[in-house]
Length: 144
Image (cartoon, rainbow, N blue to C red; front, side, top):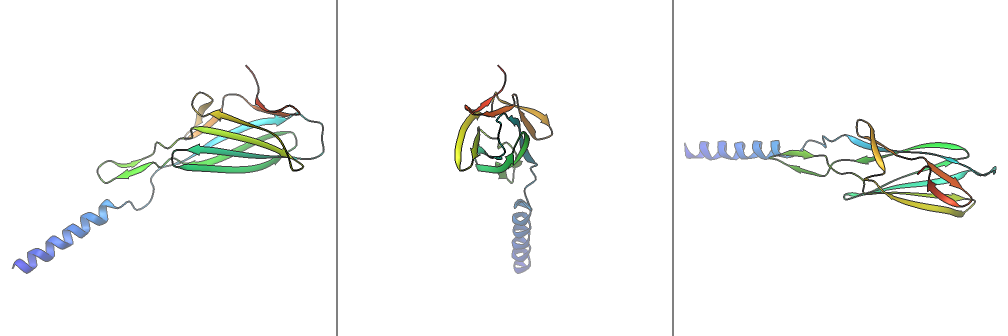
């Protein structure tokens, strides 16, 4: 009888352990949308490198543009898991870095804090408050 009870206890423990392990991340992916324009008279395309720094790592996306551009950079919002509380989906970028290159030469780089410069523009989507302007003087945000 005690052998049956110990087997049942082992099975119960195994079941509880299996249920406590996450089957997969339940967090939605976030997206930062960077929009802007290239204000230079050139036939050469500008290569953009956009990087998001988060507490859980960095996420990058590259694109080329000759005039206006919209670049979406996806990132994971998953921050932790607890069997008691479940998935925590609070991982947000802290810094957005935008670098522009043309013909192997760096035109400029801009680093802005996520908080205060990005606003929600959809479910887990964030847009910069100002458009990015790339010209001969470098990379900057348009507007005030």
